Length: 114
Image (cartoon, rainbow, N blue to C red; front, side):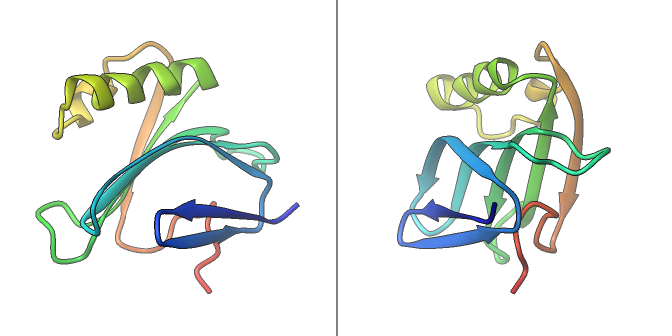
């Protein structure tokens, strides 16, 4: 089931059934969200913290942190949100359930690039 995900004033589309459990934005500069890809294809993570920075920022692109469970992903997101840790890659990889990290300037697999 295809999904539309809201990012404040705009949205992304996904060919997958996606639930956005958490979302926060830093104006037009960046946003961070906790996603559950309900029908993730084999080998792809189901629970993701997706952190996006605009191209002209210090850390541009899509930063994707995968977790073993939704609870693990939300707990890690809360550390960012409530403790305001803006350089969190090292912090996320120390969280329970952390599975991996991917960075890309291109649209991530779970969003339709068109």
